[in-house]
Amino acid sequence: MSDVATTSAQPMRRSESSNTNANSSRCEVQLFEGIKQENQPNKHAASPIQADHHSDGNCEAAIKEEKDAGMTPNGTDLEPAPASTSIKMVIPPWNGNDGWSGWMSDTVTAKSLVLCLILQAFSTGILDATTYLDFSTFASNQTGNTILLTVAVVKVSGHQLLLTGISLASFLSAALVFGHIGHYMGVRRRIWLLINVICQIIFLVLATIFLSSNGPKQTRLGEKHEWVIISLFAIMSGAQVAAARQASIQEIPTAPMTSSYVDLVSDKYLFVGLTHEKASGRNRRLIYILSMIIGSFIGGIMHKYAGSWVVVVVAMSFKLAVLGLMSIAPAEIIVKKEMEKKSKTAC
Image 1: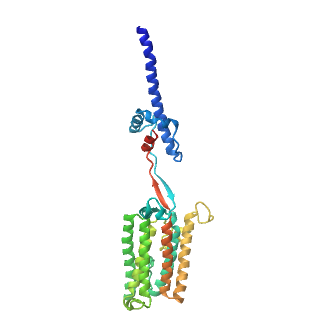
Image 2 (image 1 turned 180 degrees about the vertical axis):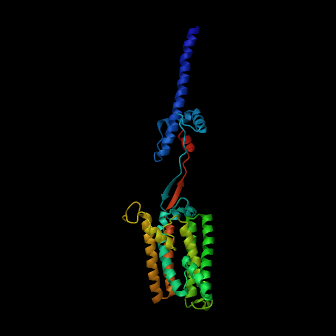
Image 3 (image 1 turned 90 degrees about the horizontal axis):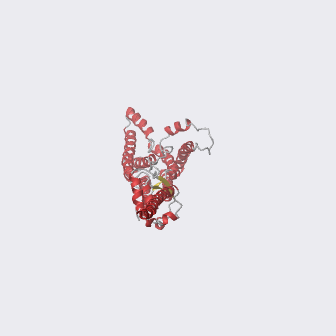
């Protein structure tokens, strides 16, 4: 009788042991299925093992225990999946799932800002040629203004000292304010980029009014308060350069030229072809320098034959083009993959 009971109990224990091993194996397979799906996110179909996971109440607890230990079932370390970056093209905001708020809060890709900065550099060349011809000082080239300021002090030229000093002070003040606002809002956040360019356009509109024959007489060229015009130009330039330097495209600062010249001629890949994989930095510097030079030529010609206010209007048209490009620029999507959630879902 005892032998019969012992004999009948042995298959039962084997069955329980078999069920336990099967449950453990199923949990291990499901965990690895979750890890596999982590690496292959496009495969959404569940495996047959995953389909009956509700029948096993111990699976979730087993996987949680392995997670808490920081190990996979075979004893290897379980490393967290790194964050990845993908890019999405902007669709009209009113058609997006997140609407206008999501569109405005997008982080624009640095690469998509290259053309915007080239256009900004071109308009800078146009304006600097005009401001120097009108005021004998620069609106954005503050290296030159620093030298002109010291020369004005030595020569005791009060008027030149006033214009150059106001230009330098206005530029630095705008760079300070706009630079720190950019850090607060996000240097490549779409809403901030658009606000920055809109402010630049407003400053140019005011400068155009003061330059035109219909503006206040006291602020016209040669009058007592003409410094207001150069101040507006310098404020616009400070906002522009601050945004350009924060855009993660160091080859296109949109105003300084000396460092760009040196970086270009000393580039390790200066003599490679235009399509070489290492030539992107060289190409950007070259295009930037050419944009500044061509813009300066065009600005000088327009100033001679059309007048200063026409030059400013043309510069504004380039700012409007930049505004449009920033509105449709592709945005980055930062995706943080969470291994634990994926594994739990797989179970």
